[in-house]
Length: 181
Image 1: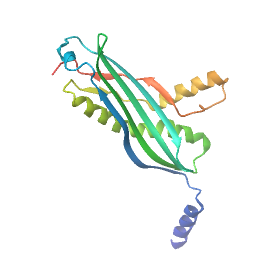
Image 2 (image 1 turned 135 degrees about the vertical axis):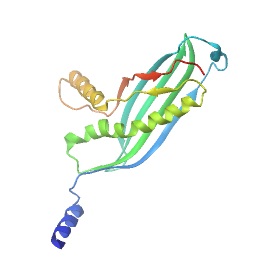
Image 3 (image 1 turned 180 degrees about the vertical axis):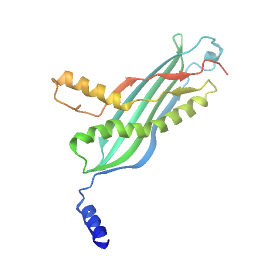
Image 4 (image 1 turned 180 degrees about the horizontal axis):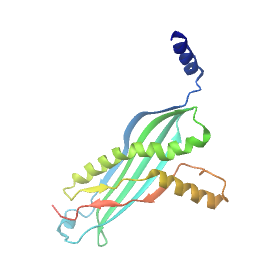
């Protein structure tokens, strides 16, 4: 038993075991604009909602990375903006001794999947504070987004594999309550 513990300790000391851990989650940026308030509150039309989502990542140190998920929500009635919300949720991740073919999927799929619930909650809270009906971002399949990005990179580069950067964007469905408060 002691020999097994020593062997495990020696293996950790060599630093060959894969490491993936979230170190910190934080709201990097959040803004809400209501440029046509209070007049826009008198409008009776149903708002049109546009949502875009971006994921990104960058190396901060040898085994430390920041991953981000950014959403922009533009809600309009006719040509007037009801509100514009932009938010970036970020996380610091430690990634070490991971095979190269697994690194990009970790940054492009796993990290955003872990961060998105925090972003959803922060955006919903900001919109709730406007006194307007709530807006709930739908779940996102970050694996499908990543695979789409890989296919686009392959078609642009002649089919040489994973994308060169960790940036991606997509349109996102939303659930919007149409009743006015």
